[in-house]
Amino acid sequence: GVETDTILQTRGLRKQFGGLTATDDVDFGIDEGELRCLIGPNGAGKSTFLKLLTGRLEPTAGSIYYDGDEIGHLPSHERVSRGISMKFQVPSIYPDLSVRENLRIPLQRIADPDTFEQRTRETLERFHLEGTADETAANLSHGQQQRLEIAMAMTLEPTLMLLDEPVAGLSVEETAEVADLLRTINAEDDVAFVVIEHDIDFVETIADQVTVLHDGAIFREGSIEDVRNDPAVKRIYLGE
Ligand code: ADP
Ligand code: MG
Picture 1 (spheres, rainbow, N blue to C red):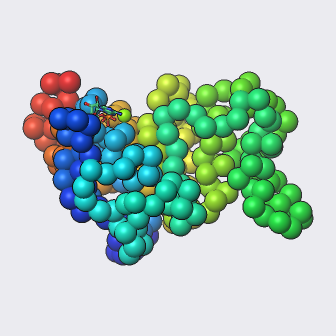
Picture 2 (cartoon, rainbow, N blue to C red):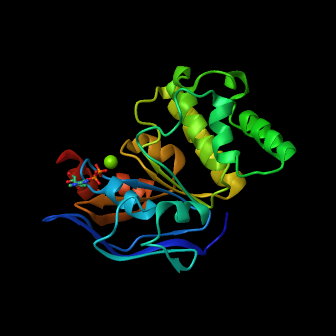
């Protein structure tokens, strides 16, 4: 879209683990409806930064503003109810439950039974999971599990989705499917994304603007072409 309103902004965000500075005074902002990739070599501080946004980690210093409010000290569930949805590297589906039962967990807040059934059906259709509705989640392919997780997150009608390496371990076809899904959600539902990824080829297929983290700090920010052709960025990746 053409939105220019900031949805998320950090100011001087810092996280130390003892003497190690994992997040080094980061000022990071994204606009409503934007899809931003966060890249950088292993150990750059990408996951730590995302965990500060979700509330899984407490910042050592600094602030996080979301939709105008400081949320840096709110518990995760309050951030979720404000519209921030999150998905980590480790899958958070319930492996012993069926696909339908998994979806019913985030949908159970809907009191009206007809609405509840309708939303379950719509979600199964939209995420191409109808054929697997009664399968046990553990038996799904990796790509189907990723779709189920994203579907569960979308039932909460988020305005911002935070994803840590959503295509790690997926096949080429599954990766393309997830890329497609993220682009569709971003375009149709106007959900903003911060997606951590260290595969630059995947990043190129989904994002225009990227932020490069290195040693906990923002190293570069710009278009994927500019960042990709930047010799200094190449050097930090090679130094991995
Ligand atoms: P990335 O996701 O970019 O690979 P991380 O955020 O996982 O990087 O890690 C950044 C740095 O912080 C690394 O040096 C890592 O070893 C360190 N780190 C991450 N989590 C912890 C923790 N819970 N305790 C101590 N050090 C940590
Ligand atoms: Mg990580």
